[in-house]
Image 1 (cartoon, rainbow, N blue to C red):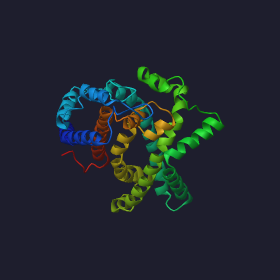
Image 2 (cartoon, rainbow, N blue to C red):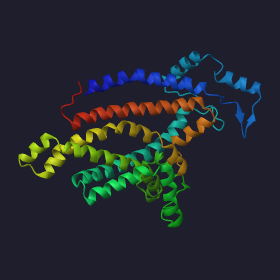
Image 3 (tube, rainbow, N blue to C red):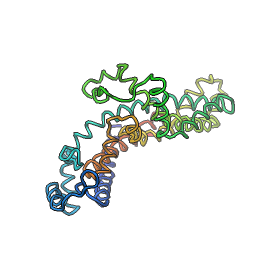
Image 4 (cartoon, rainbow, N blue to C red):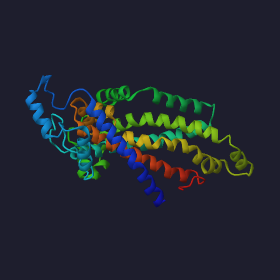
Length: 327
């Protein structure tokens, strides 16, 4: 397994390098620059723009900038921020400040999605064409149909505004306090703050996982080896959970890699709706301000999570299906 992981990591390096170059070039090719505007559409004098471009090396040829950026990246230095509100601040500090918060929301949402989605899909498959199946399918379709942009504000209106059961605003800086003190996540103040965003983000995942699990398990239950297992007199519980479910989860595991990368690096909409100080909000702000280094930095982090998620999926394949080997 160690050789497999090393081989996969080495194979991923050229992919990451290509992603870095493409994102680096495309972001710099977009119209406008990080120093063109200030405030409400007020244009910065050209002499000031030229001076700032010279100071941050933006007046150099693209390949020269890219080689310098790679040299900095080798030291885990993403360069300085070029945004108006964070000019000169190291991008690594901005990412380090927002990424742990985004990961909290993402991890809990993935746990919720799999914890509810797989049992729901299994129930729908086992009670195929019954009221249980119809109910589970209805919930899955409902969860898929309601976008987070609608579900989030709806939950805020019901549970925060009308019922006043849960808070929305993080007035005490609870999200970031977990970085200094992880034990905070076990406090009611944190749990009550996290319920709505985690449920909003996890609902869509739950629906997709439930539908995929149902379809996959229905197909597996029609396989010959399942009929053989039943003919041998095995208990139905053993047939379902010992033989069918593991194979049925292979397609579900396939979506785990992209899913982890997407939610761990921040859901832009969720973080905006619930005012969560994660990396998603920083990314959106950096697009508007043409913060080149922050945009590339977040893209690199996303790519690394995507590669790591895909490697994790490959490892899970071997557990779910012993016929799949590392070599």
